[in-house]
Image (cartoon, rainbow, N blue to C red; front, side):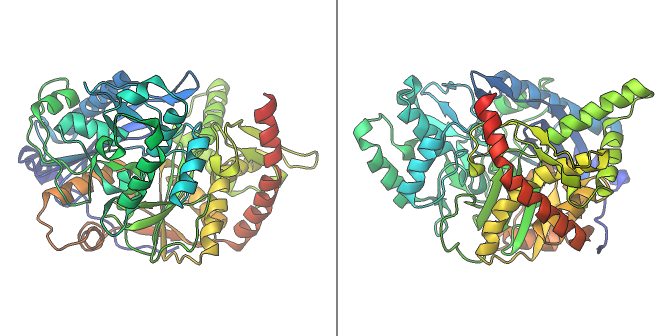
Length: 540
């Protein structure tokens, strides 16, 4: 384990004046289970936070969030932030120096000519676009994941959905919110790279593949061209409009927030996670664990061939990234934690959720290296890379397995990392060098247990910094500050290394040989047991 000097925190004596003078930047991120807002000062230290918990709905076999849920959630999150500003600093939040919005990537938000949403938002979690994704992968000569917006659009076209002919705009969740707040139909390049392939040379839509797609669907005589549907692509550091009076009213139902703050290009949660962990330079990598889990490795050179379990996307600055994305992350683990929390409440004085996680993770750290022969599958939804259109979470054990609390929670933690490791093995075949792997997400807040097990699962050192807990909302605030600052000639990587993260504390854990061997043994059973998972999907 190694450490570096600690990141400076905001000075309480100057915080109120900083807020009044609007020398602040606000980042808002719409994650899968939480909308979070982080307000930072000129030193990038957090001044206040706001949160709103929410959950996707499964309606007509589609994972979705309603428009009402989006806007009521954003307003509640902003109200929570404003209350935190008053509580901590004794001032009213009437404006900010700059702001930006990020959200879960991919998905499908098609709008008509009157700017109405034509079908309910289809999130990244939907895996019903396999036919379209396979067809487009062959057409483009790249791995085109089922989550991508173009896969959703093409599947709707293949299915002759009535709304397809009425589409006038197509964007992501972050792009939609930014559009409503600023009036600008734009998208950050990192988020855009999860809609349609990006040309690394131009930093915008791949024109050659765009032409190929237009020719591919010419016989269907759609009234639109794909070029006309997609947002304008912008890299980090560019301004993307300002918060309008209408946008301020949408965000702050009290009417206190004033318009005029410059806005950064809207980004995806993968890109803001990379910013939050300073993993945007070639050779660096980032793992984010939440409802989904994914790894982002910034490439020094293109991959030698197409891999079905690796997506090629970009950083918010447009650098090519190998992304290993798994639909199923820590949700099933959270369900088990809630179950044990419920039991603790029945047994005596209740424990808060953070203490429940702490106790369970401490137990997992003492578990058998191979989880005592227990198998856990965390598939609440499909996992396309593993050939699963749907999921069935389960625990499987043999007569000789050791069913203990420690082994059960260790198996559930291993399940979070199982599909991710399989994708990372494909990168290992490419001899992709990873100089730094940083992790973020609530999973990594409990005394290094998940961090240690991830290092063993991926066989690389894993670092966690102070900013990991704040996550993508803090990363978006940093991007907002970057867009509002005169940084001519300074790359995002340079800005992060020289300014934002110069004094950041990092805690690094090396792979433990016993954990490496134990996870390898567990993964071998995990792969063999996928037949059980597929049978459960088929028969239940």
